[in-house]
Image (cartoon, rainbow, N blue to C red; front, side):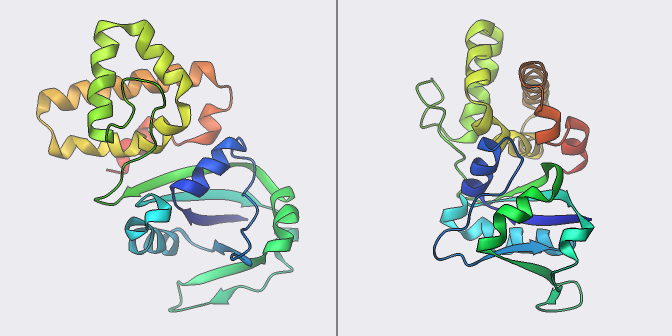
Amino acid sequence: MKLYRPVGLQELVKILNFKSEKFPDRQVWQPILYIVENYGYAEQIGTMWNLKDENSGFSGYMLEFEISDDYMKDYEIKQVGDKTHLEYWIPAEDTDNFNNSLNGKIKIINAFYGEKYKGMSFQETALENKLPDEQIRELAFFMESSYEKFLKIVKENRIPIILNLIYWMRMDSDSSKEENGVNKSVIYEIEKILSETYEDHNDVIINLKSWENAQ
């Protein structure tokens, strides 16, 4: 069974630190793990709520995953609005069993960013405390002037980069034609480095063709 979950930046970071193999345990104030039955509803939640939420990093990431039909048969689907607003409510204490029933990796299939999105800081680099728009310009500079430094930043900041990738791709519409080409060159080089460095990289994030189609 294919299901979805919209998450903010903080939860996605935890998932990536778990190698995209499981969802994090619920907090004390989170008695339920909400799972969404269809992509359209997941996107609606992500764009209506996450983009305005500071705890979500003003960003909404659409996650897709496969889970055992046999496991899900014990849960009743809940209609919480119109006919597309369908959810499964997994009690917090069942999170481990839920994770053990996943088939394969949790995948990022889209992302949306609010006006206040800042991403994550690139610790102890020239990109630290810079906004994503500035970060990609710095990366472009290093790629041309000091590839070794560029390579080091990319390898050591995998998660902050993953959080920004779709954002950077969507900067194209607000950039000059020349800058568009530079941005795409940087993104393709980043993807190449991450794919060569991390065996599971292609299981973790969507591919560049999908990013371009998502614009």
